[in-house]
Amino acid sequence: MNFEELKALDHEYVMQTYGRFEVDIDHGSGATLYDLAGREYIDFSSGIGVCSIGYGNQRWAEAITKQALKLGHISNLFYTQPYAQLAEILCRRSGMSNVFFANSGAEANEGIIKLARKYSFDKYGKGRGTIITLTNSFHGRTVTTLSATGQETFHNYFFPFNDGFRHAEPTIESVQAVAGHDVCAVMLELIQGEGGVLPMEGEFVRKLAELCQKRDWLLLIDEVQTGIGRTGSLFAYQQYGVLPDAVSFAKGIAGGLPMGGFMANKKCRGVMTAGTHGTTFGGNPICAAAALEVLDILDDHQLLEVQEKGDYIRGQIESMDVACLGSTRGLGLMIGIEVLGSQTNKELAAKLVENGVLCLTAGKMLRMLPPLTITKEEIDKGLSILKQVLA
Image (cartoon, rainbow, N blue to C red; front, side, top):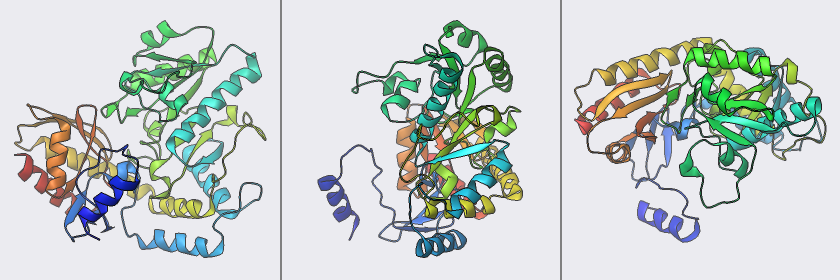
């Protein structure tokens, strides 16, 4: 099959909900990908932050194969080893108390929304279920997580949206202004990924944690994109000096297999009881085995390298004499690049893809989410192409 045949097959049988680049991807190794014609691409996208340990990782593939030959699925009516071992490691490395395993980021965020509302219902009864989220946030594409999302561009077509959310600017004053007696939680991303790679100010996050504790609101942190090493620590909140009441994760946890979930702290450990939440594929043995290998690879040394690689990429970009690129922002290997001039970020990303670098957009920024294991050689090769193409 060639590219045109693949594209025709897609257009005939697949719902056209994605704005795809005019490129197919066939296989990869490390952070380097190849299309059907054998053309090479340096990947600064990692499947939107999913392929955390790159492509063709032998250890990851062997862990999946070994578990697939042993047990592929059995449901959560029975105990299996992989999910329980994964839960222990996540809790020990995060400081959280227990875990619920799901399949995606949106599902994980639905889970922490339910947890917050049940915590409040158990303690205060009905009428205290509103959750404050931030403008420019993005929490998923289910009807509830779209309602939670603080970007009007996503609030269309699927009316009526769910009640129970208010949006505030990322300041304590704005949060207090929209608060009322019906609030049970505040939910935020520490770096707003889809909103334009916008890091939260440390002082705001710390004051918000104090406000939540004072009001007995739950502090919910959406780490679907920032979690599992993306920012140079296992979770971004570990760099902000706070411990959330609940945190969601997904994307990079299983290195390319669909997995997500959320964790609760000790205060919220017993909120979700038998029958209050569930999902058929949650904690799937194969996904859990893959995630165990990912976490083993992403040890403290590897996470330190993530910080160093991120600093290096940002320094190289900001030192380039490229008129269409401005300052950078982010943490670790979650990087936003300001776009200057008349060309849009989408136009620049398309040029990069055409010339062998896979890059993303967010808000008005270019966005980079490379595999966390990307090598110095791959980084330099990708940056060299970026400079040549955009100069």
